[in-house]
Length: 336
Ligand SMILES: Cc1ncc(COP(=O)(O)O)c(C=O)c1O
Image (cartoon, rainbow, N blue to C red; front, side, top):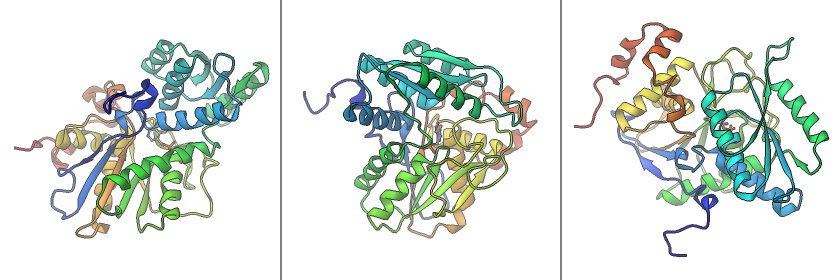
């Protein structure tokens, strides 16, 4: 192998670029960097989580290539990450999804030869799909011999995967960053980054970026339009004794953040990346001169072309908001 080749597609997971962005906090003397997790081969940060959980299963002997069947509930990025790794290792993958899963994600999962288990009706009491999906996972785990359930919501290998994410950030910068902005759902990224900061006694403030309508930090769960960040219940991985500064970002502000990232930095990223950009904007008065901020961008924008990047979808869901493009410097963006 030369220095420029890797052994198989899984060697492309991690080692994502850290890019300096000078268009986001233009009138503030602070440095801003974006960690482009969208550069992972499955398109998101969840490739790291999937790889760490499955490799640990293989090393511990719980997961045997060409024999075991992996069963997980996910309709988005983690499912794609697991599907790719399972294809690579010749593992069966049964993916429990629900009626809200996009046709594009289903097509990607089928392309990787995942078996789809579709939950069509939500819980009649709460209206949530998650409890029914988890119940189905348990039934499948009981039914299938040699089954392996990574269980991203409670598996410590999920946060552990992000010690490496944080180490890459630290290694790429001349000094410790002052702020890291992390979008939250299972809280694997937030927990892993925070553990690294504590273990290395760094002075970095980790800012949690959640969705308005998410129940992670104690609010009531409400309908949200943009998948990725947010959750309908606090995840078991979240340490109740820890606290973080939390910025709650609305669906519309996540859209504005995506459009701003596109207009000012030419980066086509997903909804939670837009939420992180909007959170930085909301936080700007608390960022001192000379500070270094890192924004983690979890996934690519291609899977949001029919929603966040569609003017028709935006108008249908938020009304006429084109004035926001001007107010937030999107319409007149560009570098020259
Ligand atoms: C697009 C996107 N952003 C953010 C997150 C949140 O990451 P975590 O589960 O590590 O909290 C996810 C998780 O699936 C995601 O898919």
